[in-house]
Image (cartoon, rainbow, N blue to C red):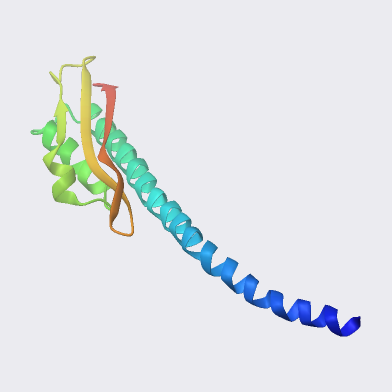
Length: 134
């Protein structure tokens, strides 16, 4: 009786490997998805922080010779982890630059979540901040 139980245990070792081989690709895809989502979320947070920094710089730069240029430079400097050409191509700092008026800074940045060369989601993050010109 004892010998039969040992044979049954030995035969189940192949089943464990088969189950692991079936589940492993799903776990890898899930892990890659979590990683891709983390990169996209990091880009969103960086974009939002860069636009906020640019709006703050624009709010205190009305006496500058080029307040819109200062705003753009601050956004690009604060968005160091992002592709600068992509960030700069869709960036605007608009205001009348009169004291008490609003300055609006808007930027967008592309994102793509792909798993094993299959594009799951893609689009553009957009961020807008308003500050009152001092």
